[in-house]
Amino acid sequence: MISINEVLETNAMVSKMNLDVRTITMGISLLDCVGADVEDTCNKIYKKITTKAEHLVATGEKISEMYGVPVVHKRISVTPIALVGGSVCKTTDDFVKLAETLDKAAKKVGVNFIGGYSALVCKGMTPADELLIRSIPKALATTDVVCSSVNVGSTKTGINMDAVKLIGEMILETAELTKEQDSLGCCKFVVFCNAPDDNPFMAGAFHGVTEADCIINVGVSGPGVVKSALEQVRGENFEVLCETIKKTAFKVTRVGQLVAKEASKLLDVPFGIVDLSLAPTPAVGDSVGEILEEIGLEYAGAPGTTAALAMLNDQVKKGGVMASSYVGGLSGAFIPVSEDQRMIDAVSAGALTLEKLEAMTCVCSVGLDMIAIPGDTKATTISGIIADEMALGMINQKTTAVRLIPVIGKTVGDTVEFGGLLGYAPIMPVNQFACDKFINRGGRIPAPIHSFKN
Image (cartoon, rainbow, N blue to C red; front, side, top):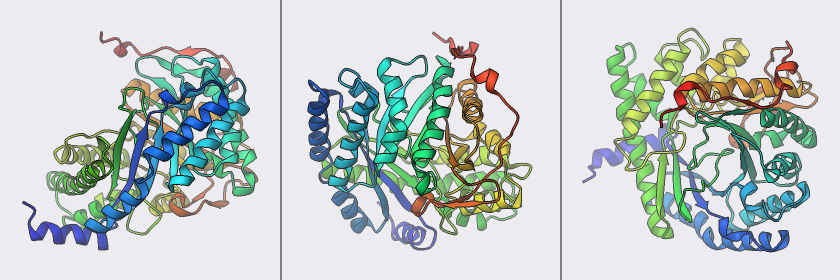
């Protein structure tokens, strides 16, 4: 039984601490949508998405009204499109037609984003994979709600450096094609190592090939709730601190579990997972950076930051796994610069650098997330930054991701406004020393020795 105190406590979390369910994401398999040609495939994709997700948005709004918990976004993830279009797409423009179909279908059902314009190339690229990757700039420039991702590495296979090199070039091309919107296209693209099949968050969501035909995944978010709880134990030792985070994560995750089960029932779609990630927004009080400060740091990036973030992530997971029957996705703290006001402040104060964010990635999934960099940054430099992050994921047997935005026409000292949940960001300086010869070697970095466990 749920007590009246628990109800009142949850209401306070929503009204005063920015608790929300960040997303209900419906995963849809498109493997049965491969047609005789591109047009036939597009028609089948459109029909399946608009049929399966017809009531997704209305259901999210109904649940929000039922329980008084904001459901901020309703999203769709689909099978990696490189697999779906592999037999019918012969040019990059063919793949762009699939992207435009995804955009049209997503708008028809009213979701905020659709993810899965993706390729899985951690060991090598098929011709279709390469075509899709080369089509990403145009696809993101000609659509509004389509999100794209590429998995270029894993602990089992190593890092596909050919793909890493190509993606550096494609990120710059995407920035150029969307420069009139401050290179907004790059906000909708992420590069992964060890990408999970059931991540409900954008831009990296796709529907894994091992998943059911249709699934409901939920992402919860409660940085403000955690910060408020920690304010009550200010100055206490680490044991008290950790217990407080665990108990708070349990309560937040229970809300996500409730919403996920209700959405599953109303839509008659199996429940997949709850993602425990602490996802900030630009709103004051809804910040992972503020949590780190409440733990005892002057700014995120100060000495001790990586240790504090490691503890936070671990305690969130320990509390969350007790609250849900199925935990998945990324389930960690997001530290995007543009989407977190105190992270922005830390960059502006000089406390937080790219190198420190890279170190923080060792203990969270997306350490280089929504990072705005100078528009004249070289493609090989971008590829080098990606390679470093992928290596952290590969060696540490964890998910890592990179979302860089080289903003054409802007440099260090400027700021860029993306709007909405994407927020705004200062342009961060990038190490100017060259890595061209390293990136241009080509081939694959082998898997680490500890990957051989069979």
